[in-house]
Image (cartoon, rainbow, N blue to C red):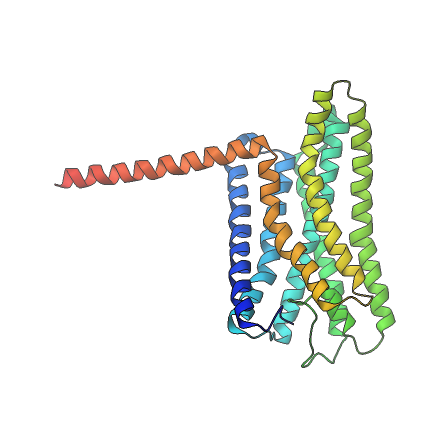
Length: 313
């Protein structure tokens, strides 16, 4: 289902979502380049941030380009294979976002509550293992949802009350055995929603308790400032994603569900690089270094071209 059949509004939506998609991709890629080019940022926190940015780019790329094409061509049809592909990839990247935010909360917990053992606990091997576990768990979630959807044999000329193949909407289209689908939906919600949120809340409970024991106000502010960006993204992502996922079992209007889906599929990935860069001095310094390096290399290239041209003359 599209957002509107009004041609003038569709032109506005085309420009809006295209610009948001470009900002999302460029912002996250710029953040990845800034972290990769600065050796001072080769730490566990920024390692997870790079993986989160990659997941954000993948997540928004599985949903937004198809929506932009649909708005441009005034057609919201998707094939069965295309729908299953979009379902699988969106679930993988969404779960990666979900689990990486939990891993980043654990990283902040270790950094603030166990600073002396931080380097030993969050070594490269453990960080890579946590990312790998997040990816495997995301694949399992995608596989489980695909198995439930493949049992449905009536997907022909049906309407999905969203702008992409939302798993919760697809499961609600089941022709039979809806009780099993509801059980699976809430089971997945508990495993991939309740448990990660519980881990994040527990981590921040320990973090806040540790920060409150810091004697100086300046020290408390510096300790909590490293968590502010992550906490903002967590509230934005989980608040909308879980609301859409669980509310699909109740009578919610398609317009409200689609609008909430836009927040966690388009807006959140777009805001993540800005939230982390604007509130982080290290990221801002790395971005300035990257921009200066790019500008100086272009100047050198232009100057060398002029010198070659002069010598030729």
